[in-house]
Amino acid sequence: MNKTSKTFLKDMINAISPSGYENCAAAVWKAYAEKQADTVETDVHGNSHAVFNKGGKVKVMLAGHYDEIGFLISHIDDKGFLWIAPIGGWDPQIAQGQRVHIIGNGGKIISGVIGKIAIHLQEPEQRKKVSEIKDLWVDIGAKDKKETEKWVSIGDPLVIQYGFEELLNDRAVGRAFDDRAGAFSILEAGRLLAKEKTQCEVHIVATVQEEIGLRGARTAAFGIEPDVGIAVDVTFATDHPNIGSVVQQEGLVKIDGGPVVTRGPNINPKLFDLIIKTAKTEKIPVQIVAEARGTGTDANAIQLNRAGCATALISIPLRHMHSPCELISLKDVEAVSKLLAAVIRKITPRTNFIPF
Image (cartoon, rainbow, N blue to C red; front, side):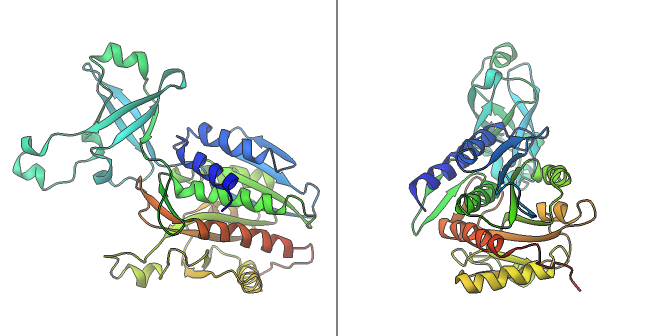
């Protein structure tokens, strides 16, 4: 991955942008998009929308969400402690004892810690149970409620303090690779296509509020009305210890194994075939998984848009999902961008996506 692209990815991961509060990630994404795209705009929900090859005959939409799981402040008590509500799906075991960053009054970043009763002070039965998020609080070091309210307010968002870090073998770890890696890869695909004339008008959308119900993709797709839609998200890597029988249900997915292409009712079969054929032609290794229902990703919202859309889902293998230490392969991310660009080059007005 080149230095400019890696810096863009790093800045995306370090942005504080839980669902409904995506403005920090949006600023990073749009600044990069404006150097590449014909037009860049943000809609009323906060989706960022870059158009490449305006005027192309086939509308293709690429979607990757740039929101993340997080928390918001639900209550400030008299002693100045913050009580929080989860945004998105949390394992409560992960939250306790973590440092957090809050976007506080005036946009200032405030540091805090998530506290709980020390194990020494717990009753024996308490030690056997996982603390629920409603029983955890955030301490910013304030003396009382009055001081706390100088810095933060009800509804302010917060995330765990973990940033981008490179590991061995072109792997990286950080918060919010779900799905900033996807929002990154679709825009990188646009960059690869930027100086080319394809027959597609490519709409690249960094979507909001996926973690709380695919909300941004639903409204963005309605406005664009694409002929073809490809969502890019992360998926479970199943190549780590203690995975057990999950492999039989989710399939074997490996870090560094290449893009993961989903097959099932959510996916247009002819678009799936085109992706697989293109991967073989371009010598891009791919992994195939099956999903018997809607995928729970932006692909579901796009497929059901208006009278229907030929839809596919390409995913990036990821370990430790919905934790502050999500791990991906930079090689996999790059391969997704290359595959997307290659597929779009092959789509013409004559390409038929009617399944049978």
